[in-house]
Every structure is written in structure tokens, then in C-alpha cells.
Image 1 (tube, one colour):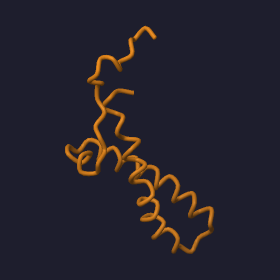
Image 2: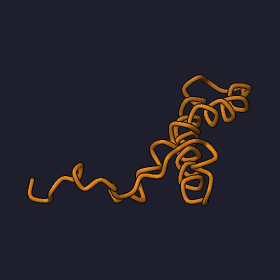
Image 3: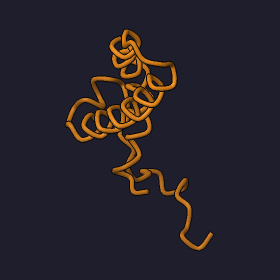
Image 4: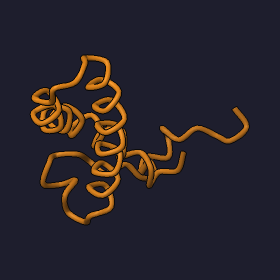
Length: 85
């Protein structure tokens, strides 16, 4: 995975629980069985969280606003690993 893709897991973890709660707020009130609610909630929460995490990771300035450091190349050459290891 490239350096530009390392922020998505952090965003996904940050947004996943609120997304589950927001979707469950509506799904729990449905007059259907438990497994139907689960089958609707699980993929809806995953897809919504992934889309929101991706959108937040590409918007400039949001990583700083939420305290997530952008990870890029290492600036200290002593810490870099050679490609032959």
C-alpha cells in the first residue's frame, strides 16, 4: 500500500461506530426479524463507513483538524530500511 493510502484505516476506525449507531437508529425500529435487521445493518454500515473514510482521507486539511498525522516518506535516513532487506 502506498503512503497516500495509509490514512484510510484510521478514518475508518474513527467513523465506523457513529455510522453503525446512525443506521441502527432507523433499522431497529423496523417490524422485521432480528436477522433481517442484521443483514441490512452490516453491509450498509461497512459500505457507508468505507465511503466516508475515503472521502475524509482525500479532503485537504481534515487530517490536521482531527489530529491524524499524514504519513509520508521517512525524513530520517537512519530509520529508512533498504529495499534489499
